[in-house]
Length: 494
Image (cartoon, rainbow, N blue to C red; front, side, top):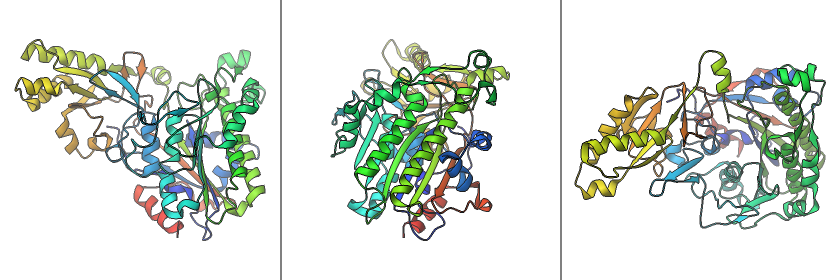
């Protein structure tokens, strides 16, 4: 397990922390790949803009999840719910159904249909209330809650179970999409944007450096020689165009539904990115990565400026949360003499199957493996009147012999371990659960990397800014726990 001293939740941070008057519009944004170290690095070079304003004038916090972090939806859900996977039911981006060895998105829901999307998704698999849900609990049906993002699962987690609308940018059609779970369907303004051609116009622009290439702090050798140029239509979800499209729809929703002008507070939940197309890790390692921050600063500044004109600065609060997606680049670790190796759960399951066959005969005792768990063929074991617990212990003992495996446990024992159980979602857990040494990544089929975050304890930066903020530096950079979060939220929603 990756050690941790503080566990946090996004619940925290969406509402006025130090001001008696609550804001009428709360904007909460998850920023993929944003790290506190990189924010500090680029902040002195940012012109007036949203990122500079929020990060330099607002309250800042650092939180660190206590459960396993793979760079997927599990971290987003844990932050938004203030709970671990054991409670919220989401342990990874995907899960396997061992009966047919097929992979499914964590939020898959066959009872719903995609609207301009091939995905059938909903928040039903998330078993605990999320940030948007708690906002709804507090302010009732009159509150307007809308989520806009780039990734369908992240956007649904932002929207929670009770948002009025949820829109993500479909990766195939490059149009705003949603799920039938949200009764409103695709908001009219999103449908209008899909039809008016503004998305394709934004994506048609090539992304070139905003500065002379030698003015960036971290240009690569190739960038120094050639600069960089990306076609945003080819990489729509990992270029500045993606953030621009999110801002444009967010503003359209704010105007259409008069968010921030209603009797009860409203909420916009957004997803941005600072990861360029060729990013191998979250750290800034190229001019393109720095340029993503420059562009986000401008886009976020435009969003804040337009909203302030509409509702007044004193009625606005903005919360930014950095979300680890790729952690430290495996290439960077290799350069430092710390190579990251890959561990295939599928191959481990095959070896476990061969081992049990040698002990109990040629039968399919193991159905497969995914993530950090091995699935047994329980009906077959029961039919042959064998001891499931004995077989679990035997396979756990076998796995411990692998170089990559730090520890392995039968499921019952794993559920009783106070550290390991936090990362287990009951409906995903198999019969044997294992953890890896820190220099190994989980893979599936030797191609599908599961664990992108190759660092033991990624810190998540959180910045909370209000339109009437004074930039009190004495209150900056606090570590927050889930208990602090609950207390802050309870106090500020009075």
